[in-house]
Image 1 (tube, rainbow, N blue to C red):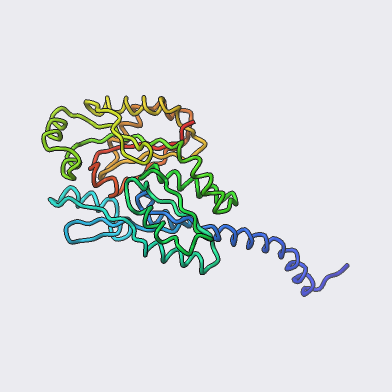
Image 2 (cartoon, rainbow, N blue to C red; image 1 turned 120 degrees about the vertical axis):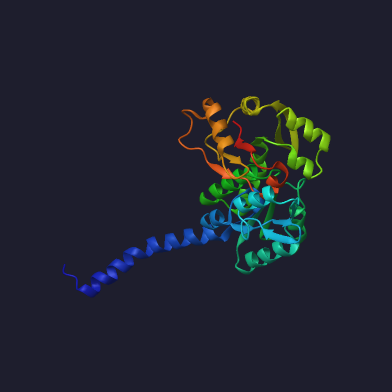
Amino acid sequence: MIFSQTNLFVLRILCLRPKVRRLRERHDFFMSVRLIIDSASDITKEMADQLHLDFLPMKTIFGENEFLDGVTMTHREFYEKLIESDCMPTTSQISPAEYGDLFEDVKKNGDTAVVITLSGKLSGSFQSANIALEGYEDCITIVDSENVSVGERILILYAHRLRGQGKSAAEIASELNKRKKDICVIALLDTLEYLKRGGRISSAAAFAGNLLSIKPVIAIVNGEVTVLGKARGSKNGSNILMQEVSKNGGIDFDMPYCLGYTGLDDSMLQKYIKDSVSLWDGKTDSLPISTIGSTIGTHAGPGGIGVSFFHK
């Protein structure tokens, strides 16, 4: 049978239609389930855009100057200001109005969304999201991550994975609420100075701790910051971090995990990775590393390191 050029063109179009339709349906479904996150997760605006996440920045205030975390001030710029400034910064939660504007956009476009917030025990952002929820219950589901920083980050990355598998907003929220209890966040602080400046500990305690090279080891437990112990020196601190990882059943490398650091360089984190090589060797080809922003950095100061993972 001989086909004219016109017939061949029509035949190609007819053959392509099912494929184009499938791609369009997949794209429309993917985009219909939105993930709304905050910058306390230490996911940057650039990364959020790459992953198609709706990004809401926390606010960091130095004196009379207000900055949007990850938008008008990078993590590096935050630590430069923190080190150079005599003024102790404060952070401010996301307002109900900011959530409300996004919720309206979700509804207007016929989408659904899962909102993942930092722990409701550490910030009023979770409450703000719930205040804004009225009238949007049919399309918005809110999940309290019960975490912050790299702990919140890996829960969001898990949500992104679930969305990519075609899960609905309700299914994603249900799975997040179930698995968030398996997240462990363990961190080692390098200095007590910023806890003192923020009024979290006394000047005497900070002086004694710094004099003795005391390194607090902290964790997020049930949505709150808990002190696990105090190590003398960074090497002992690294040993405690390794012990805590083992105590929690080890790292599930099939799930998202992340290392993080505060400050202008990751030298302390690289030392920890070297000292704890038995945790990673032969189990993973890469170690995701994140800078930790102002939400935690305000109180931790530079030189802190942390690890977040789902336990086995």
